[in-house]
Image 1 (tube, rainbow, N blue to C red):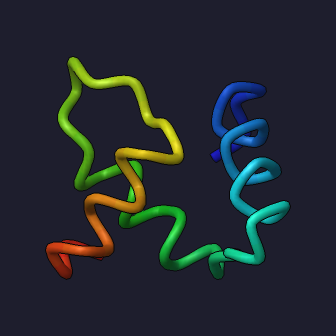
Image 2: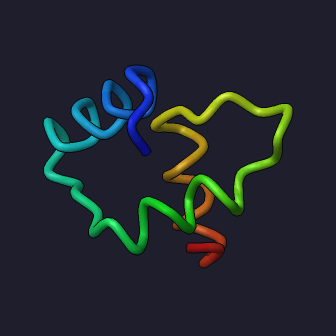
Length: 52
């Protein structure tokens, strides 16, 4: 949750009026596949399929 990339993604989502608690942020990181880059699109997809 401290990586520059993850903070950038969260900042971009915040600009779209989407923010996440630290608990949800941790779930995003653990639920994302290891070989996938976490992106706003991936997080939105996870939310759409209720994976977070």
